Every structure is written in C-alpha cells, then in structure tokens.
Image 1 (cartoon, rainbow, N blue to C red):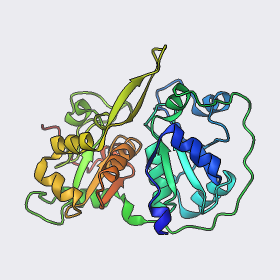
Image 2: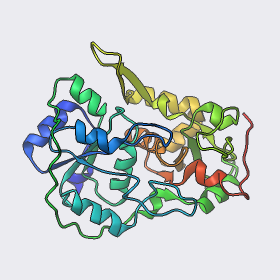
Image 3: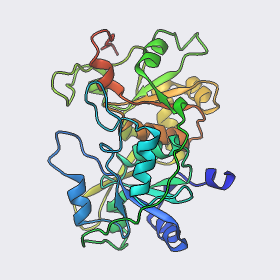
Length: 311
C-alpha cells in the first residue's frame, strides 16, 4: 500500500509513455463538456485518442440525484462494474486525461481515490499536450477493453460533503470555531457574487455563506499549441498554487489548511471543477480536503438555502 500511495497525482506525456512501457497501465479519457456545449466527448474520443485509451463517461458512472444532476459519486458497485467494463484491475495504474488539458480529469481522479484506488494519476495537459509534444494519436475506431474482475471497494465517505453538512458548517464562524471547515468555490467571481448568471436557466447565482471565491482557473495556466491557435491548460507550480490559496483565504488560514489543522471543502457549479481545486490542494499536501458533490446547483435548487451575494 505504501508503494501505491506514492503514485504521483500528475504525469507528463513522457511520464505516461514510460509508465505504459512498463505495463499494467489503464489510460482513460474522462473528457466532459458543459451542458450548453455542442461538443460530444464520446464522439471526439472515437475520432482521436491516446493509444489504448478507454472512455470514462462521468455522467454514466454516477448515482441518480433528486434534482437530476449528473456525474454524482457512484455507488461502490457501480464504480466496480465500470472498472470491470474498462478492463481495470485493483493493481492497475489508472491515468486519466481530458481534451481541455485540465478540466474534468481531476474529478475522475477524485472518484478513483475516494474508492481507494490510490494508484491513479492525471495527465497534466491532457490530450492536447500529448499531441503537441509529438506522441502518437490514434484515429481508428477503439477496441473494446477486455473485461476484468474488480471487487467491490470501500468508499471513503469522508471525502464527500452532503448538503446537510455544508449547511451546518456554514452556520459556524470559521474565525472562532475550530471545528468549522473552510469552503472554497471554483466558479467565476461574478457567479460567486451574484453579478453574473448561472449557466443553468432559472438558477440563482451567489454563494454559500462564509465561503471563499477561488476560481478553478487560478490554479491553471494556459499554453498555446505551436503552429496553432489551440490552447490547453496545466497546473501551475506548487509555489504558485500556495500563493493562489493565500490570496483567496489569507496566509493564516492557508497555513492551518496545509498543516491539517483546518479541513477544507471544494465546491463549484455541479462538482466537476471542484475537482481541480481538490487536486491543487492535494498537490500542496493538504491532508483534509473534501468535495461538495452536488455543489452550487444542488444547494441553490433548494428553497430553504440561504444565498449570499455580498463581497
């Protein structure tokens, strides 16, 4: 288990190439697009992918939600069934990428880690970085994975926060109540402050009381593909991640979070880019990081929720 725990969160394209050559690697395309996008991730995967990759549909490997939200954390058996279908074994090194660079792959990584599959990483820069650095791209129809056997895992329920937990925590004063967790919101500052609309029609913008704004793209940097206008994202360096966290929650609170003296929860629109913040915090070594699965859409859809629009 100690060897598995040492598996890095991030791999470069050359790291992935070396890992594949050593064997027992399962590469997954976990690309996801916003509901208002015309792009279709499965169709793009079928047309262009990393050799040997299988497609992980985060909306399919999920549990139903009372408001119809997608990509909610699956049950233990649904997760295991998906791994079997994708040909993943308990000792497979799972490497996840997406077509943005870094966007939905951290959410998929969060899922694997929450189910105890510590031997998992993301490809930092995703498919576009892989291609930009000259590695092979496959454009033929994908082959179906050879099914595996994957025992029902143990789910780390402490990794996910529920609506009730988030509401209870929002009533505590993070400055004076040691048990209070911090909550950082990955949506844009305009949506956080209620000045910009939500992409989901009819949903109020604003934020959960006592939460902090930390747009997920603050943890990322953009790169332009040479000879093209196409761009992709990667994580910024650890010193830059630390400074971004300090800018969002203050130096004292950041120190408490990074030393494990205060827990922190990440949130976003529907639990997708909250994964970017979760991973950024894990890269900094924060030990107590959770994710609010339904995030703002679930919170704001409830009439009893208090919506804050103050700065």
